[in-house]
Image (cartoon, rainbow, N blue to C red; front, top):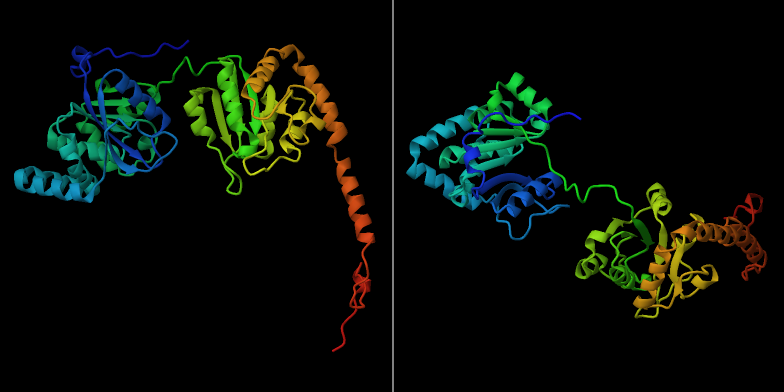
Length: 421
């Protein structure tokens, strides 16, 4: 196993302050929320007792969004105006100096944005830019004006296609600490950008090694619109009552405007099982087939909704049977006509919980149950059904009465005659 390089020098006095609770002004961009690796670093710092304030160049929601308790400062034209006026009247020489740098390095926008962050950034112990692009350029001006040490994490593209190479070289020269994520990047910073070796450290991204590790799980799949008649709320309650750490529920589907909806994600959160439920959204084709193939048990808790709507026969049950999966379902509509094991009454959380428990504890029978379901699928749901449909349609077409207006039914092109005018 390769041994990781560790710092061999004191990192600008920080060794003696390892237990100090820091106020960190972190400059980010949230065009689609935060990235997962940024989110993990921020959470880890906050959990250690540090105060992290986010100064964002863009702000739109995404997969990973800031915790509501984290201070977030976004770009504001009003704050920029006030910041520029403050600089002009209180620090005219510094304003002129930084304005000249901004013009020379084509980073005027970053200078303006930085002035809008100044008031909220006062009192920070360190300015920390995540990415060596416009975040770093903005952090440079904040650091210069407020006298706050500047640090940056450089990941990848900034070294290969930086949007402003001139300003990048100027800004990294002013950083008290440069962090990057690989030894390859470190060598590039030293060799191509002239960074002193003692000023750049490799700090790799973190992952939760307890969460991201292989473990044996029982994967229960359910597929359908997030509609009342699909019974997802009953299924989620049953999974919560199972209280098994080795069970995961995979849900494929999403809301449908023309059906009585339920909010599956909110229900999972309320029940405290969000970490046991994977929502895959609407899927089809190879992606859906992969989930059928890899699940252990298929479950659909169908029921009559508040308006009296019911299932006919759920197509997803037929598909899961074709994949030779054990089925847990309800005695609803036409389901008992094909499913002959693990059937429970509609809306009965207790019965569904016990059926799922029994299914989970019957792993030695999964193959037998699945093969039986495959045989049923072959007998009930094969393409021969379409042959019968075709036959019925042909028979129906053959019973058509002549048109009352005196014409006749057109069957082929030879029966088409021009109309005299």
